[in-house]
View 1 (cartoon, helix red, strand yellow):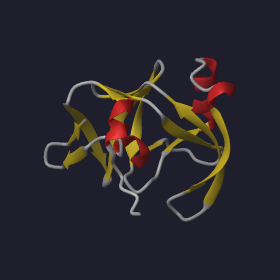
View 2 (cartoon, one colour):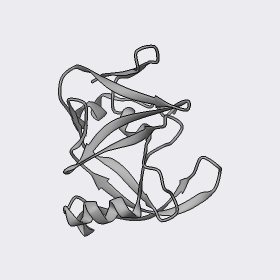
View 3 (cartoon, one colour):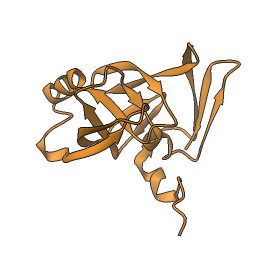
View 4 (cartoon, helix red, strand yellow):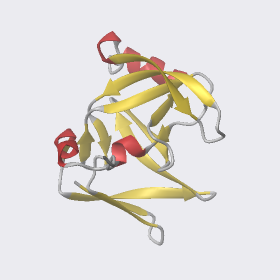
Length: 145
């Protein structure tokens, strides 16, 4: 069958209100938004073309120190296709309690690149929401649980 992006089971991974509006930052045609993992609140590149979350090895060290990444949620090496078509072998972890706006989201796969310099928020987080609307005029992302 067809693999749909959304199903009702994904909603169980989200806690928070039915809807939230999140301020985004537009820069050189790209969209960035604030996402918090552990004590770290960073500005992530919002990339609906990316399948998952991509972090740098520096961020990995920090999240290991906070015990957010550990052997218990390590899922091995997987391939992550970068925007330029290159494939990078990345360490993968399953992470809970990712905060975006008023939402907390569980069961997100995070890939760690040794090559990349950007942190990217891809579709695996946003696919858990029923809908998302990017309001370019007002620089807002509207998420519906």
